[in-house]
Structure formats: structure tokens, C-alpha cells
Length: 375
View 1 (cartoon, rainbow, N blue to C red):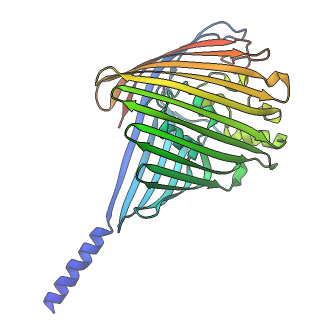
View 2 (cartoon, rainbow, N blue to C red; view 1 turned 90 degrees about the vertical axis):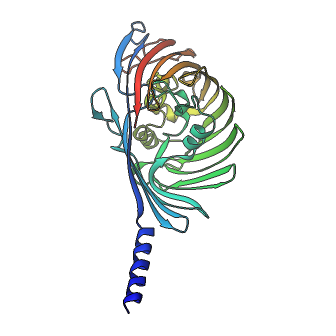
View 3 (tube, rainbow, N blue to C red; view 1 turned 135 degrees about the horizontal axis):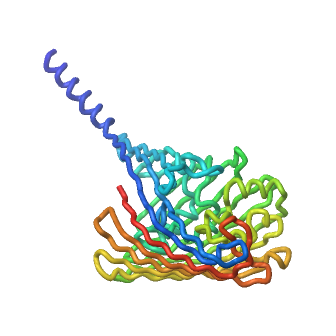
């Protein structure tokens, strides 16, 4: 009896241990910089110098949870808050306190299913396959490419991810309750031997039934110290949006300057109110990077965008360019310097002033230096 009790006790302890293999990881980024931009005055001229609480990467604090259930099954969860390092404040409304908040199951057999607010499939594809800068997917205060990613995240989302060798696929669906648009999309990606390529599409259905259809494709090649990438994206409006649709777009920041590094791209490209007359936006990108030393990375990226609309006031072209030098002081801390230029063409095109109103400026230079620490 004693032996049987001992065996049962050991068995129970081993089973308990097998189901208790969980971890909670606190992570974050503290990024602060100084940025100067030209042509931000009310009349078009004049420069602005400001401290930015996130130059290369937006500052954040997050929690990752993993519990091993055994048999190749895991429970995953993530909570992530974004903040303004320069003031210590949270992102203002309509952005939520938790920029990511999801839970899910992962299996070595069927893949991963996650539920909650999370990155959409377009953002996942671009940032994993043909990112602007491989040591950080994009430069946070100047990121024109994110403007076509349909807000990068979606509320109330169910997302499925599977991988088989070099192939990865994702599907997403969000019901659209709470005033947001209903979404459905998927991507397919290949990555092996330094070559990555992928294609993706997502529909964003507005309250009236009109849609914003987004598509993207691109690829990258890593060869020794060199990194080359190219991509293309499009947002196309189908149907006839209403004023209520415009309110939904505004509340979700689909095409706000927040998504484009505050470049004024939203005013130049029509802004949220212009949804009623907007037809299509397209952008292609081309970039390269070079790792000069184990500590020093150099990169540059060029973007060309075009907008068409129902009226001539919405017709315009825009080009964006940025270059970044990033120097690693350690595995977790780096210094960076960046320069960028925005240029517009079109009779009615205008960048924004620092007050957020069009100021008739057609070009803008930006200069940023800062420090980033990841933990």
C-alpha cells in the first residue's frame, strides 16, 4: 500500500509539473529622440523642433504569457500598452490603452488561433517579409507604408496562423461590433535561404456596406551584409460611402497622419473626410540596407504614392524618402539618426502645419536623432 501510494504521488506530481510549465514575460521599449521638420508654419514656411517619445520605435510596455499544456499544445496571451515617453502619457483617444490584447491556443499540429485586438494580416505580412528596415520594421515617426495597412490592428478579431516549412499563411475575421468595420483577409508567405515573398488581401466593410479593399505583395533578399526589398500596396473604395462611414474611418484612424508619421499625408491625400469622394490609393516601395559593421546598420527607403478621386481636388501624387543610420551600443541599446523628405504634386495638394491644417506647402524635410533601449 505504501509503495502504491508513493507511485501515485509521484505520478500526480509529474502530471502537475507537466501542466504547470508556464511563463510570464515583461517586455518593453523606451525610445526618445529629437526631431526637426521644415515647412510646418501656418503659411507654409517655418521649422519645428520637438522631443518625440518614440523615434525609431514607439515606446511600449507589454506582458507575454505562455503556458505549456503538453502534447505540443500551448496557451498564449499578450497585453501591450503604448505610451509617449516624452510626457509619460498614454495615447490619446480614440486609441485604446491596450494596443494589443489577445489570448489563444497554439498546437504543433493545427497552428495558432488568437482572439482579441491584434495586428491584422496585412501588417503581419509586410513587417515579416519586406520590411523597410530589418532591425526595426519601420521608422515610427516617418512610416508612409503603414498608411495602407488599414490601421495595422483590428478590434474583435479572430486570427488563424499556420506554418509548414517555409510557407506561412494567415486568415483573419472581425465582426465589426462597437462601431468598427467588419474585416476579412488572408496572406500567404514564403521565406527560405534569404529570400522572402508574400501576397495578401483584406476587406474592410463599412456600416453602409461599402468596402475598402486592400491588397499588397512584395519580397526581400538578404545576401551577406546587404538587404534589398520591394513592395506594392493598394486601398480601393467600392460602393458609395456615407457620412457615417466617414465617422467610422475617423474613429479607427484608417488614414490619419498618425499612420504616416505625422507627415501631413492624410491632408495631402484627402484625409478621413475625403472618403466620400476617394476612389483609390496606391503605393510602391523600394529599399536597401547595408550592415557596415556588427554595430552599424545603414538603410534607405523610397515610396511613391498616387491617389485618385471623384473630383479633381482629390487627385495627387506623393513621394517619400528616408535614410537611417543605427549604431548598437549593446544588444539592447542603440543610437540612431534619420533624414526624410516628403514631396507632393497636385493643384490641391498640401501638407499640414503644426496646427494640423493645410498650409499649401508641397515639400518637407525631417531630421531625427535618438536613443532606443529594448528590454
